[in-house]
Length: 447
Image (cartoon, rainbow, N blue to C red; front, side, top):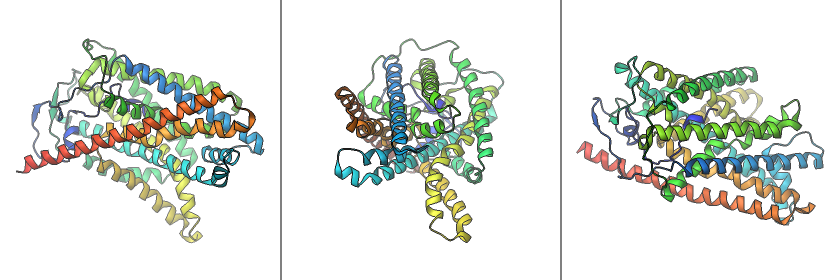
């Protein structure tokens, strides 16, 4: 649930954010607040469709859930074959390659484990970097609009306001608190964090939906979009649904693991429905003004400022949960290579360094929408769409897997690979264009 409001139905690569999010992406700051007409730096009007967006979101969500089911089947088959109680994603990949027809892959099967571990680390730390940007953008809007926040909730005007402080300042402000948060390793405390994150997120979503269903809505929205926009949307959608790394651990913790597939399909169906409604209603409500996070479109009144604050609190605690996955991979590996006397110090140092790394990544590219698309395209697509179908072929090839299943798996993997390559290229291209625009704008400002 922590990623819900990050989804955009339009997948737009450029954004114009009230209270300076756009200015912060340019890397400039000013001591004076001024209002200027909204402008698109490239003059583009790419807005992903009102029709193809929900359909594509449904299709990507269905494929992602299907690949989760494939991973479950492979893991279940391997646990029975190897007579083990549990195998995680990394182990499933390694053991699957050990039984595949290729002698070279069997010999190098351990590299499959390393690759999946690396992708999980990149994906989860990418989530954490996105959370830094989300919290900074919302905190910036709350703080810098506080002097004219009212009790009356009116739609936000089409204006861009120059920020008082760069969004990077807010990221650095949040950093010490997140460092303290991730030093907590008690499972009971982490479960409390999870509960708090769920409560604040659901409360915020309820109020967001209440506002989105109010009229008026845009009636002249485009029904088609450029393919470049769709590539960014693909990465965003994969980022939103990617949770395949948690499927096997969740199943192992259930009292009745055999019921997990039904729970998975029911839960993910609800999540897909929720995302489609949020994205569609948000785009219908705000049209071309839809921001990278829907919370930035909410009215400047105390009610919805509190919604942003609650959601940011939820994301804050969710950070610890997302951080737990890469920490459990990296920290034990590093600690095992030092003496017991240094174990605690190294543990805390590595955790602190990883949090600083996510902050540095956010500071380096403070564009929420592009980073979401990049993380989704680079690593999430591999974990969610490319690897599971190939594991099914490798696991069941020696057991007379049908040709139809092989063709289906290959097509899904090819789709994921194409989305990975072209989505990554488009996200990096947009980042480069934004950097050039920011540098040119800074030159004009300071001359």
